[in-house]
Length: 192
Image (cartoon, rainbow, N blue to C red; front, side, top):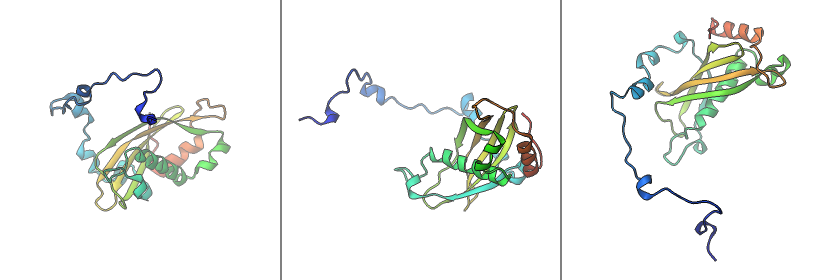
């Protein structure tokens, strides 16, 4: 009896060819504008965190189960780290997750944009920082950084955009209490 792997799935065909799977990878040239637009300005990241308004709010140690076959943190886990950092940021401004509901206001993720600069491995201690970088009518954009504690090397940077919604899931303005807490914590209130 053939194994399930030897039988094709019903109503499917495979059109990929060996040559298609082995097509050479093209490296972008230094003059490629799309490549240069993606490069991070090293001068921006040499500025101390506090002077850029970043706040270290969450630390974690990489566990074995968070790594991939290459022995480095699986890229998707940085989204979890960013989410944990957001939770810690909200705790730091005095609005823990479980206390936002009485405001009849919840945060829903609408965009995550992370850039990967270096690798972290098992038992690396990571320092995660965040700040609110932009405030819209009903949205908050959070800037995120993850650095290795041992050498302060930037591992991941990016943004998370959340929209505030009411109990019916409809966008609603960011509550004044939240805006005041952000301003008190960061020393200023960013604009859209």
